[in-house]
Image 1 (spheres, rainbow, N blue to C red):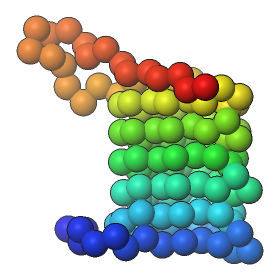
Image 2 (image 1 turned 90 degrees about the vertical axis):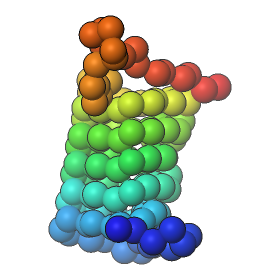
Image 3 (image 1 turned 120 degrees about the vertical axis):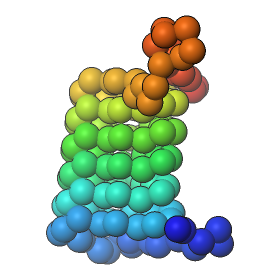
Image 4 (image 1 turned 135 degrees about the vertical axis):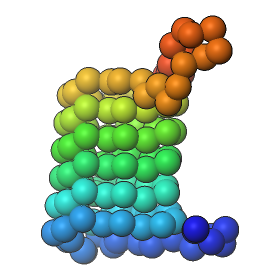
Length: 125
């Protein structure tokens, strides 16, 4: 179980990682990752490039991602360039962000009435 402290890991702008990255807490990526990322929370810098699948509870993307993204809470900033499918529970996209892929609302379960829960989409200025 992850500690409740404010621990986070940083991948600097001068770092390139080839391989999968797994972090139990928050991960800040300013460099390049060629591999899948699995973490509790991802914060991506504008100059960062991720080539691989991203899985996180929450993600705030500002750079380039080539691969699928799965996040409970996803924020796509205006500087983000995403090439891949996006799976989310709650989604915020700033005006100017570019996404080439499909959006799919994740449905962890159905409501008591048997209806599928409505997706939450927020468009930011």
